[in-house]
Length: 151
Image 1 (cartoon, rainbow, N blue to C red):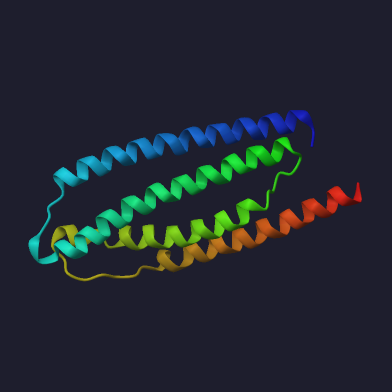
Image 2: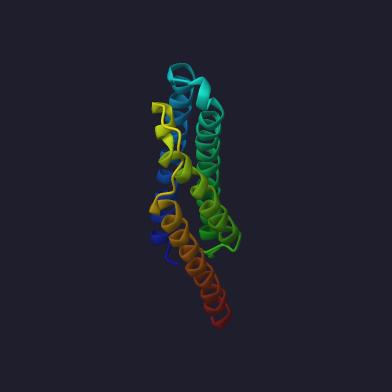
């Protein structure tokens, strides 16, 4: 990989890390505000707790996983391997965590007193697309290894 391309990719990764950190900080603010300002209803408090804590804990985990993918990519670029194998498992983990985040976000209406849970299409489609991305990433990793061996 050319040095100029390598530097621009690494710079772009650092920008993405900055935005991940910024998003985590704003999410912490929303979490603190939500604990104090959410209408906790006694008859659905259990469901509300699962939705609220599930959403924010999985949100934090999601961005930690994304940050790990970016850090692995930076390390891989420096080692002339832009598709590190460690990212494949992280991408599959992101798909699983994203499913929970989407489910909790889609059922946020329980804070309005509604007593039902639903599954929207994005709970299913987005993780499937992320898994497909993981498969493509795995193929890119194998192709990268093959091209390094042939040189």
